[in-house]
Length: 227
Ligand code: AP5
Ligand code: MG
Ligand code: ZN
Image 1: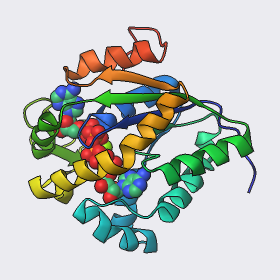
Image 2: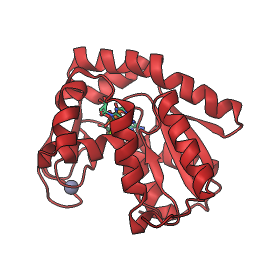
Image 3: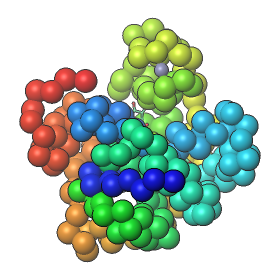
Image 4: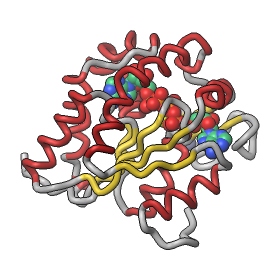
């Protein structure tokens, strides 16, 4: 397999429901790199009934993390695809210190670097409300919210006309576990990026367009670019 150089890796970190997916799709377009979301890739594998999808299923439905070796291998393969030759916008990875080290090793090996790790901060009680009202497209993974970001036509994706569904792990009891897992396993990753001087904190508890503008600024992108 040919080695690729990833010199523009940008990471979106944040709790479940912080708005990573909502912002990532747009930001990836602006940055000209693919949006690589570990959760979306795992759900795709489940839909296709792959070995990885079957192995991941029980962890995901309980709100637990899928084991590092499976996720690291999946992301490494995705980053080897030709469209990621100039980098990627990673959403939901790395999420453990083990995944952090695996990414770091890969970037050292290939001469790449993390340009920014953006941390979208949202209070826990807001997360629960967001996830309870979320609808997601089965085909292109675009996310909507019943109240905060509704689709033009109920149950139908604005982008691709795909069917919208509610994620089984958005049930209140599973959300509580996902938030706990996040605090236990992923906050140490956030701290690690902070120690490296790469972390940019964004207040995610504002309207979608305001958060988007703040992300633009944090990444040093020009304003006025439209999705
Ligand atoms: P994953 O799919 O990554 O889920 P998550 O991290 O829990 O994050 P979400 O996708 O729930 O939230 P989001 O921040 O993307 O929010 P969104 O933009 O949709 O992971 C799922 C599972 O896969 C994990 O539990 C685990 O099992 C497994 N997994 C994935 N990655 C893994 C890894 N690296 N290692 C191991 N296991 C892994 O927004 C949420 C809602 O809020 C939407 O309805 C949206 O419309 C609305 N909204 C967004 N922004 C705003 C705003 N500013 N104001 C009002 N509403 C807003
Ligand atoms: Mg997401
Ligand atoms: Zn769609």
